[in-house]
Image 1 (cartoon, each protein chain N blue to C red):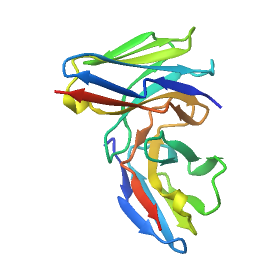
Image 2 (image 1 turned 90 degrees about the vertical axis):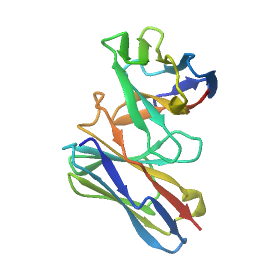
Image 3 (image 1 turned 90 degrees about the horizontal axis):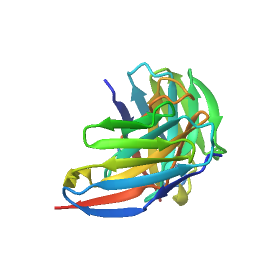
Image 4 (image 1 turned 120 degrees about the horizontal axis):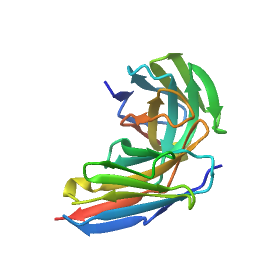
Amino acid sequence: GENVEQHPSTLSVQEGDSAVIKCTYSDSASNYFPWYKQELGKGPQLIIDIRSNVGEKKDQRIAVTLNKTAKHFSLHITETQPEDSAVYFCAAEAGYALNFGKGTSLLVTP
Amino acid sequence: DTEVTQTPKHLVMGMTNKKSLKCEQHMGHRAMYWYKQKAKKPPELMFVYSYEKLSINESVPSRFSPECPNSSLLNLHLHALQPEDSALYLCASSHGTGGGYDAFFGPGTRLTVL
């Protein structure tokens, strides 16, 4: 099935700095790439997604970029805040459901 | 309403018990999913229901039995589980399957099998 690799596995940044998480996928047929944020004790929350007909999408402090040729996509968080601390999962459409990356644990220190 | 609800939040059961997990959504979504998530791991797909019919079973052991009574409800019946089945069980829903529909997750049921 679809293989999604995600890096880094852990990321620590100071409040106000930017954070970047990168993912690669293997199935060139995938056209939909969502990002989820999971806080401790909660279910994953969809925060942004991108489809293959666009290269970049922004929502306030969050942006995603997609390079279909290279099969990679990235999440960019600017002006990070302590409440951004969580585990972030990238995912790629895989037939009926989603294949997830292994997750990035983001820690934003005040 | 963009909420998926799950009950119970926590469940402790013995290996001989029978229990059920419940999931509900009122977004009019026609696809519903069960995922299993172990600590520090991504969610793993278990089952997919599309228009109340089981369309995907990811080789899940028969001690897990899904049921979709109607388009808003999804159950997961548990029987004779093993300690390694302890995990967070997540329900999700989306408008459809395939083609990149946004999937919304519930908060999960934290299951402990003794």
